[in-house]
Image 1 (cartoon, one colour):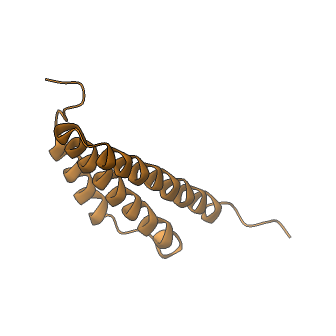
Image 2 (image 1 turned 180 degrees about the vertical axis):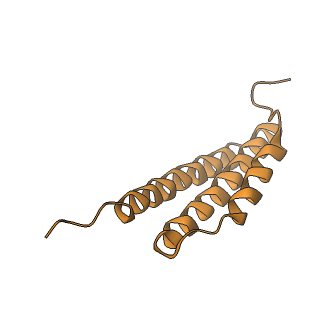
Length: 92
């Protein structure tokens, strides 16, 4: 098995389904939706990367890289939003 061949691609799909089942509280719902979007983008990046390796296609590899970068940016934004929402209110 090549190092670039996915060992268990269904793990990514199962984890995504688990994420979809989570009901976030109202205050965290926007951040949760961002995380779900980031997860979908990461799954797409993974799929594109696997396809680019099997097809030896540089264009697909670049698209996979862009999708992965976008997923990381979305996740970082969602995490910052979560942390901000969970900050204790300022003391009067």
